[in-house]
Image (cartoon, rainbow, N blue to C red; front, side):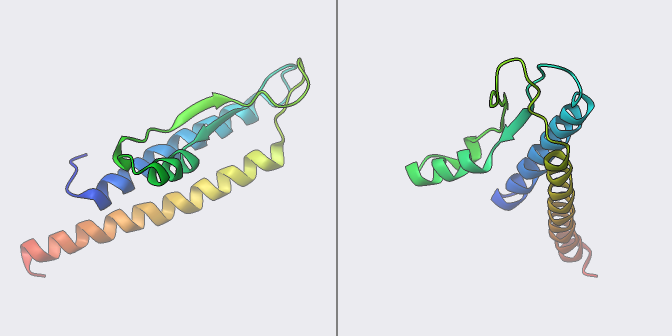
Length: 115
């Protein structure tokens, strides 16, 4: 997607993060009964806040997918209800971000076509 401005770049980045988060949650759910499986999580918001605090370039912040090593070794740490809650939150945020992008491009369309 072409980066028209900072706002659309942020919207695109958030949609990418939400996609990764959804894939991770679905992978975790699929492996909820596998002994010793450690769940995946996607970190982004905390990295973005850290970059803001340091005054670093926010556009350079990339989401990080990592294994959550919590829990006893050899035990599965996937909690189905937590994964479903993450999926619900990601779905709601995805709806907000797609509406935000749609509104921006509808404004551009109106400016170009005059309708």
